[in-house]
Image (cartoon, rainbow, N blue to C red; front, side):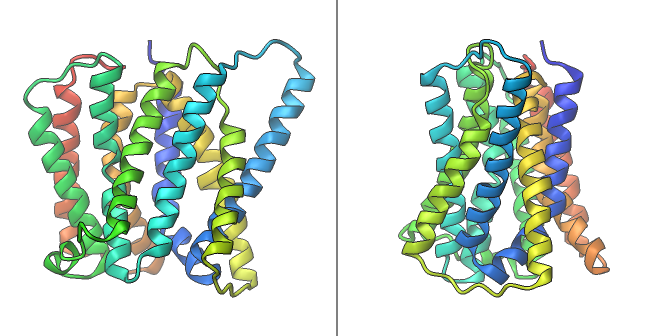
Length: 300
């Protein structure tokens, strides 16, 4: 049974991610995409591993670790981060970056799909219009945030560009990671501290293949510290709790709101009046998410 506390933890993770997407972009522009990702995950992973070691020392006992489950979930977690950061880092233009972001935002749809395939959820015909409407709202939110015409944004979707597949791979792997973690939650404890550390090491390796110019300042250090604590160390642990113990069907549908909340947060931070399209996007996302939620017969 899903717990209310677990679902609340998942909601809080989504809020952290939505409120800090703009800050993440600012940090990447200053020190580089792979540099930022590597340092964020190395620091968050080190803190998580130290916390895990201290808790284990304070409360010795048998941990339930399935090597197969931890390895499989770890590979999916790391693959998602590599797809996402590589897509952003290798995108040759602002349009390509936005295309990667939009494809990444398909992960709520893939959580719903994999929940049906792997968790035994059942859905009626409302799932199709729900997904279409919610995804349309997501696309409109991303477009409105960029200030670019929708036609210009969607022209960036070139099947011959490998960045296209990196963005799509990110959406698929995060959806699959979330559902597989839930499916085997009773079989194995979470290996999240090790996933974070492994991600940081791999992104650090990629940084040497794709050298970046970093401009360090007090602002950059402050943004890095914030990114380590809130959207990484706290949010990923909260999401892990949410998908393991909470209502994953509800979390997947509410996840469609992340790009909308992110855009509104950025407007509030910059003291800019939101474009009218944002409110239309909000309505589309809310309507689509509601249709998706009510179409699911079993709340996992």
